[in-house]
Image 1: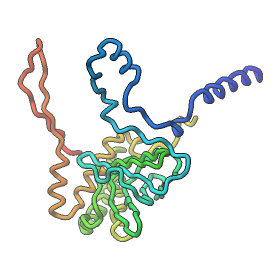
Image 2: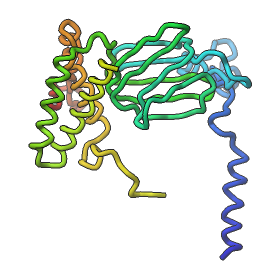
Image 3: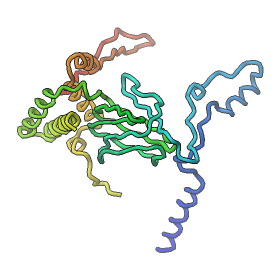
Image 4: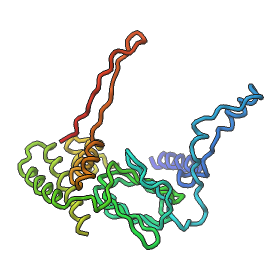
Length: 200
Length: 70
């Protein structure tokens, strides 16, 4: 039994060494070279048509030393809040707590909970309240933050937040099915997060 | 691997992530100050027009509107 275990262990290790980790990939290509060569053989006088790959900006390579700035892309379904903005640090409201992201952060994918996102650049800090979303931090110090709703803190109305909190606390106590309880709990979580964003 | 790993309470209650995320977004939009709130409520509406195709020809399109979850 032990000998079979050794055999099983040996194979995955060999396979892992054959492929590089996705965190260490080189810069992405902008054109498919095999397609271009095949095209030139058949139609040497025409330019090859552009493929979607050539319209995309290539992924920057993972630098060998830690860069000094973090590049942030913060997008919402209806607008792009920040596009490749160079900042010093962002603090994101991950489900596991407030997470600070500095340049050179390990590649991570985190789900966000309703909370405050703060973007620090030099001495200025911009804060947004995010309803929920994800953060993808890449090894080359690029961070993609995606959220469904993000509002600057001064657009939040404190009275409505208090009313909402009271309403959902009441709904939780009168909820019967699991689904109603879950919705009431979500309401409480979101409103308490809004509350602490306003007061904190 | 733990297949009984702690799932978020909303998933345990049968809700999907998209439903959860949309509920959170709607709650946040309802707590905004006035001019921003009306703009945000227009964003909440999701509607699309569907046309079924038969014999290579589209039929009359219908507009489906997804009413926001309460």
